[in-house]
Length: 268
Image 1 (spheres, rainbow, N blue to C red):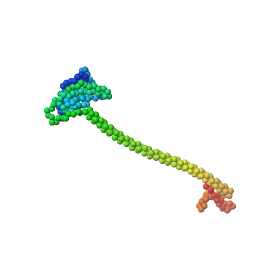
Image 2 (cartoon, rainbow, N blue to C red):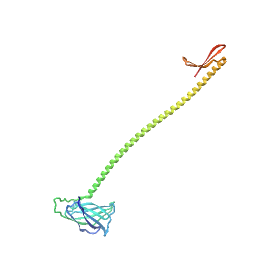
Image 3 (cartoon, helix red, strand yellow):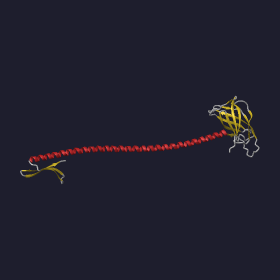
Image 4 (cartoon, one colour):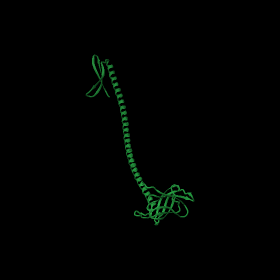
């Protein structure tokens, strides 16, 4: 179970002289000592605007310095006395600095003393030195932001790669569609031309058939006329000379008791 926080509450004006013996602490303590600093302006709460940054500057008894970023709510600032702040015994000086979000304005509280009582047990004593908590925090924030930026850039590159591949696939598909459309158009043109040829051939066939029937009728009319002239019709029809592949219209009749055969070639 974690140790409880030891919190001392003080009220500090934003103007005036150094306040003596405002806070007491024990040398070597860590992650337990806090100073709840209430900022006042002539006795009235000095409310810190949202977006501002607050830093506690501590000059230790050995004259090393600690810069610690602080959390705040309205006019109450929580100052952590970490292991470096309490590394050296004696009287430390502390002040709270407030910066506006645009860094154009700065206001600092009066200085107050922190009495750090020497620790009897010293085998685990921390070597005192300067601590730049703000710098460390800023560098960590920068590193975190850089990691996020790198990850975001990698994600962007991957997304761009996917987009390029998708675009290439779309172009290939479009090219295939265009080729297929050209092939379809060519096939349709061929079908239309074939249909025109069929219609033309059918028209020629009908015309030829009509001409053939006309000529056949004319030949039959001539054959019938010849038979009539002969005076007696026994038979009239068609016949085919297979050797010569010629079709004839024929009529069989008798004249003066003698049978006759009249042949008339049919030109088709």
